[in-house]
Image (cartoon, rainbow, N blue to C red; front, side, top):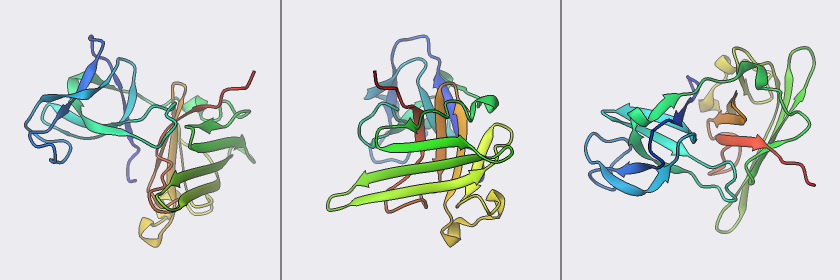
Length: 204
C-alpha cells in the first residue's frame, strides 16, 4: 500500500488481446519466457490493475464490474497492449445519490464536513461453510485525486500500520469507475474491497 495501484487500459489495434501462459503453468506472474496463448482475453478499452512488469510482459488483474461472483482473471499480457490511465480528481464525489457496487460489494460516498467525504462499504465472501464479511466506515478528505484512509480516518494514512491490523484503503476515480485498493485487513479471511465499482443503476 506504499504506492497507488497502477491502472491501465487495453489499446491494441486487434479485437482480442489474449493472456499468455508462462513456460510452466505453475510459474509466478510474470515470467520472462513463454508466450503460449491462453483462452482468456481482453478487448480494447478494458481497464485493469497492473502489477509487476518483466521483459515484454506485465502482470494484470481484470475483473468485470458486472460480475455476479467474486472472480478476477490474473495473468500476463504484452506491455505494448497497455496504456496508463490517470485518475479523474474532480470526480471522486460524483454520483453521491447512488451507491457504487460490484454486485457482491457496495461502497457509498457522501459529502461530509468541510472538504471531507463520508465513506461506507460492505463486502461479503461466501466461504464453504460460512460467510465472511467486511465493513469500512470512515471520514476523509481527498488529495491530488486520491482518497485514502486508515480505519475510520482519524489516524493519518501514512502513520497507520498494517502490521497492527489497521484497515488501509485507497480510492480513485477513473472514467466512470471507482478503483479501490485495500490491504486485505478490512474484514474476515479472503474479504477484500480491491477492484472496480460502477454507480448502481436506478430501477425503472
